[in-house]
Amino acid sequence: MLKGCPYFSTPQVTITVNNILDRTMKEQLQQRLESLKAEFESGQKVLAELDAKQANLHETLLRISGAIQVLEEELARVEEAPEDDASQLNSPVNNGREQSEPIPAR
Image (cartoon, rainbow, N blue to C red; front, top):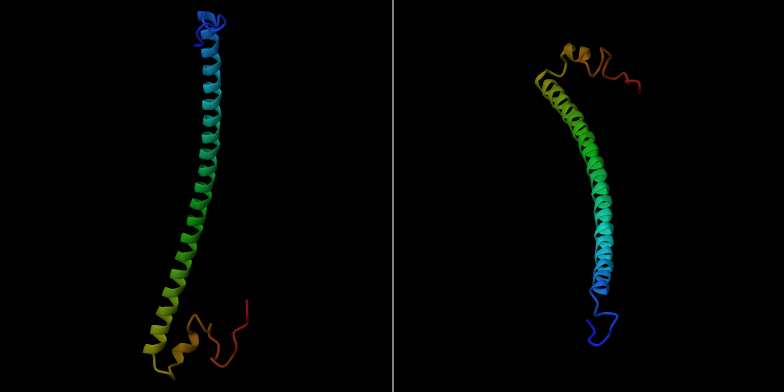
């Protein structure tokens, strides 16, 4: 308080100053709250997008893993069979065609 100043010595003026300070503090807190809520919502959206990407990547890796397994099994089967074995012509890879016959593109 300013000593000797009649405007700041009354309790009513002190309450008014405190009310102004309280309103300013409340406004700052409210702004910070809104800012944090917006940041939180933005973070949730990013997390949801990353979860979706992770799920898609997991599905892709499962498909690739399955394809690797099929090719490894086929290679092992081909390596075990004699080269002139006629059963190779009916393998799912050749679809019953001669090996020299090209497989049409799909």
